[in-house]
Length: 461
Image 1 (cartoon, rainbow, N blue to C red):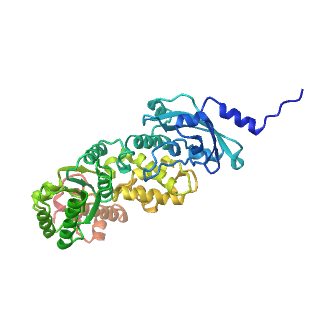
Image 2 (cartoon, rainbow, N blue to C red; image 1 turned 120 degrees about the vertical axis):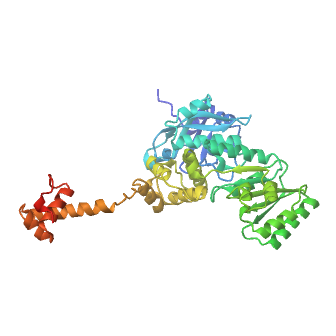
Image 3 (cartoon, rainbow, N blue to C red; image 1 turned 180 degrees about the horizontal axis):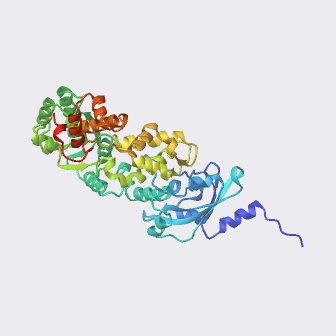
């Protein structure tokens, strides 16, 4: 009996009926097929899934929570044509991130591979098991999962990627920012340049309860003169009185002139319907104690303080932040980079980061543009970063103090030895070579430790 031929349509019907979630990706990372089990697991209509690109990226704008686009992506090395395994995720109906193991099987070899069949387990994994399956925990894949978990917990309500991390310092800043977003008290965001002060302050405004649609009025205090500042505050007050509460954002408020402080203090009496947010490099209460800032205004603006640590103070978060910026770049450009090589991470960890997160993001984006593979390597990093890492490998050695008497004694001892060698050990001849008398020469031999015994009477001048 002739063997029954299996057609493509027959295979499609079998895949559609499979009990476990299945989907197929083409070379453009687009879902070209999915079965009902996948649609049910992701709580997404199959028609909406087909045609969706699943990049190894989590968008920087936070418009889409970590669901299909971020959760079903394969590791970047999958598209090199080899079978891989990874943890895929989706959001449950209860808004919880769930994890499953998946196999990405290439349909073809190397560059001839045209598609990938993805088989997803039928059972969810505990979060702890999902993270344990990605070993060691500092790999790009582990950071990818950690970013997804963070955004699942926070991003839908607070769009603050700068606050990702597990360090105690950033944890305290994150709690304070959440508190500020739930109340209308005056809030001061303190941090060194490049730490994300303005970004956090704006996020507090846009994510505050009841603040949707309210007006944000930013003012650069280091540039505004008192007249401009006064008119801006007056306009913000009119806006709050007329139609909706406004938020006045005072950027670099610690650099406000004395005249500007006086104007602001007069225009902002307590009880006005105006929310105040401010950023500063130095705490205002500290400047007030030094007599550099009005104490009443410092207290008015610092009801709640959020202190952002410098990047070198939270290096345990460096891997997560690097992965975050890599995946932002994946979302912005056409590449698919998995993460940093260990050697590249070591270079970044040894850098001082004077401009904090801003400089880290610029560095990652620069390296991203310079790479063509699936990992960012040391050679792709900017030259200044690599040179700084090399300099750190050879720390400065403190200069030894020069004791003049000891230094001169060493020189004299060397000259005496040379004279003796040239004179064949004859002390009289050696003294003549040095231009001194024999008694003086003998006395110096004893004083320099080159001759033992007392000075003879005949050797004394």
